[in-house]
Length: 160
Image 1 (cartoon, helix red, strand yellow):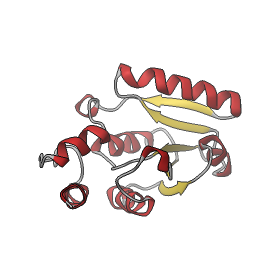
Image 2: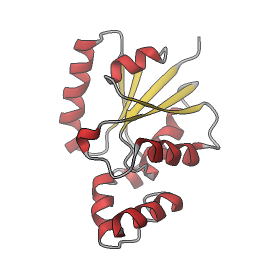
Image 3: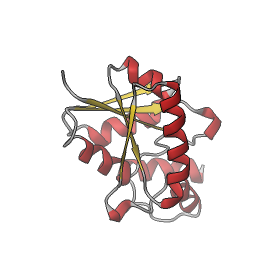
Image 4: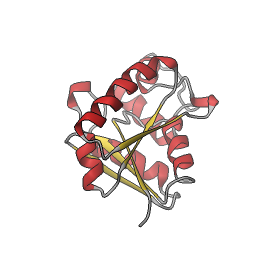
């Protein structure tokens, strides 16, 4: 049986931090399923289809990476994918409380699913999609944080 980890998130948009985590997770797991949450409650800038396409393009050279989307509880999606591992990224201490609360809730909902936390490389530890959208709205150069095709899409969306 191959070990599969599911990495759920909104990825609005995908950043080099996300890509770094996916690449490093592939050195641990045979397969990494990157699952884009519909999660309209967060008010995403990009559609699910756009986010899926960004991730497919960003990871196309990575073997064993599958890009998908879901509109359910993450633990239910992980189980449907035949996995027992949910992967989550922890950037800063500020992420810890929310992620810890979510992991404990998920364990209560599905005690057969384990949450594994990974730290990004230090060069991406401070990058958040929310901050990038704010900076991008003021015309900041985001090329150090996101792939060029994502930076171009951000410029189009944010400058309207």
